[in-house]
Length: 311
Image (cartoon, rainbow, N blue to C red; front, side, top):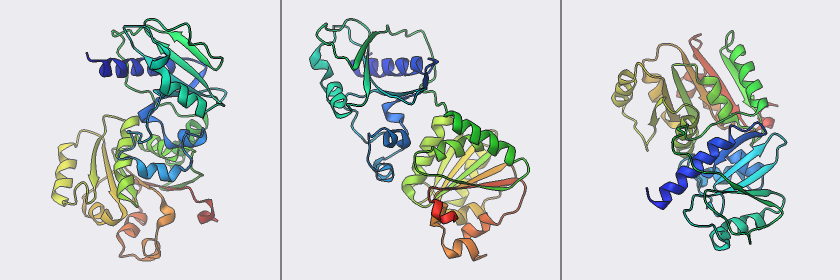
């Protein structure tokens, strides 16, 4: 095992360990940190700008300078973690990036997890050094995604709501975790359709959903994925025994209307404040047809960060 793989395996090991601790609300590998966490704790200045900088939603385009893990305590404190799976002693030069990020975030504390030894010269009040041996025999999930308590409450309310209702709305500011909430609400459905205005978001939605339900089969329906109706139908038929995610852009919604979908379907309309007059009122419009589908077997959730739109 080369050093890069050893390092990453140790990061996963520590992240899973942190997610088992009672005083920790949630812990993320750097590449998996949701934008709301980065925004809430000052790692990015613009939530939406950062979304567009990511090629995929599970690859963080911000450089991981000295940051392997970030975890949030039950008291909503953000802790920056650096992991060192070294056969030799960890010295000051090995932590230059970590010291830099700690200087950038003077309001936070840090932790260094290491497997062998660490220099006694590394002694800073805001940094805790923790010896934790790497146990390769412990096989755990790569990452554990745990919703906040308020997100769990919303999910429970929504699940009960959809027993007797077809459509619902989540309108909340950026940083609340609307994508996580909507994914969790929809997981019990055979087919989930995520409809979004931009191609960047369509790919991101697949990557994000797989963080929460990695076994769900997915297909991207747009010019970067496929717009072939036969290919889409074949995908659904070939995965008839699995749960399915169709991620589609507004412009490709005609393809959804052309698919023979039967029941147990959940449609998520992302950024629905971008709906046009035609989307809402023109009965011949493809999005309008999805909006006005009245089957009890098709549930719909509309997501927006724009409270003024609702008013």
